[in-house]
Every structure is written in C-alpha cells, then in structure tokens.
Length: 188
Picture (cartoon, one colour):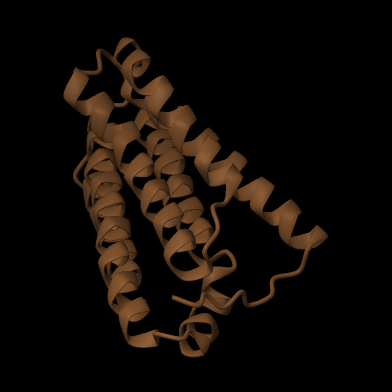
C-alpha cells in the first residue's frame, strides 16, 4: 500500500527537476525550485508522520484488517492525486514564477496540497479513528486562501501553500514530542 505515495513522490521530484532543467536558469527559477522542493519535502514529512510507524500495526490489530486495508488503499489514491496535482503545479511555478496567476493555476497550486491534506485526514480517520487538528486547520486555511491566490504571482501562491504545510508539519512535530506515538487500534 505505501508504495503509491513513494512512487508519486518520485514522480513529483522527477517532474520538478525536469521542469527546472528545461527552464532559463535565472534566479527566479532557482527560487521557485527551492520553494516547490520544500513543498515536496513537507508533503513527504506530513505523510510519514505517525502513520509510517503505526499504520501496519494498527491495521494488523484491527478486528477487520482486510476491510481496513481496502479502505486504506482507496485513501492512498486521494493522497496520490494530491501529490500529482502538486507536481503539476510545481512545473507551472518553475516555468513562470512571476506575473499573473490564472485562476486554474491558483487552484492547482493550492489544490494539490489541499487534496493531499484531505487524503491524509482520511487516512488518519480510516486507520486511527481520529482527526489531526493541525491538518484540518491547514486544509481549511488552504481552501479559504485559494480564491485570493489568483491575485498573486505563482511563486507567492506556492509560498502560501508551503507556509501552510510547514505550519502543519511543525505542529505535528511539537505534538509528537509532547505525546510520543502509540498504536490506536480501530475496532471496525
């Protein structure tokens, strides 16, 4: 099951590198590359946070592990959709970091990370029977900011997405340090 996000992450990194290598190699593109690479790293960090350690144990200890495994596989498709949307947005940001942001671009730049966070919330609920508040707030913040990002440059829109993901990852890290992870078997 966990191969899907790893594969999608590899595609995201490959597409980002390819978009940069085909560019003009100006400082603008280098800054854009740094921002979108940070976004990719943060998505990876948010994906593995707690779930990587506990998902297999929790599913194995579930009363209906087969059904839970099937739901988890479906949820991974949502995660992959968010990662691939982010990869497509990364290409746009690198190609044209400044200037107008068409509405469709803004929705992709913000929407990829939003779909990813939504998928991660579904994973938390499906496997652990809980909702991570930081991820929920991050998702709601991205959704609230999405319409306004079309008035910003693609790079500024990407910075907003990166900032939200960084805040989610920072809160997750602080919570983990305060409360080390434990499996929370779901009885479903």
